[in-house]
Image (cartoon, rainbow, N blue to C red; front, side, top):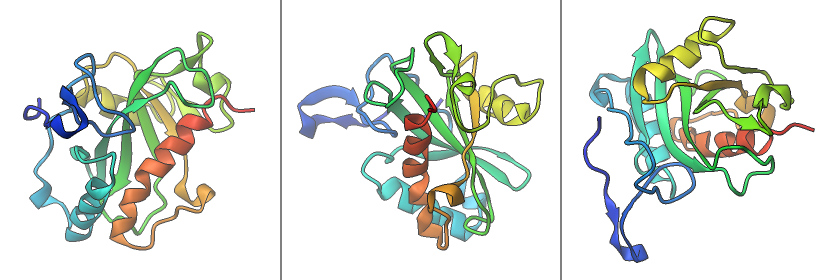
Length: 192
């Protein structure tokens, strides 16, 4: 696992972990997955990671797995209590699968652990976008990739194209938009 997380003494939450996503982590949150060696990634991708970490909520974002030209980036833990759908879970880890050629692609794979549910049913049963949960089925390779690096038993891959949200990247620094894309997916998880 990764180094000990930093504390956030200036917030008055001594001992609380600074997390990615959209909240200050608690001791109940999982440790961030171990990072891969960033120096082996393309310079533009490294620039994008720096921009992502410069976002207020993603200081601990890190690349955690590489498969071919794809890099799995851990964004952090997201607080689901204020999301539009009423998730059965209160928190979830968020990941994006990005091409190392970023920004020369249209990112679209957002993966959460655990696999999120609403009223006991898979989000895919509610969502207006495609979601995939079974590692042995269509797009299960994305689910398997996250399960390899996390301590979770389940994961949910969301097909969530940035171009459909007018977030398509033009510059390496646009990797910072991953947080907006993740929050968009989480807030639309209940569908219509």
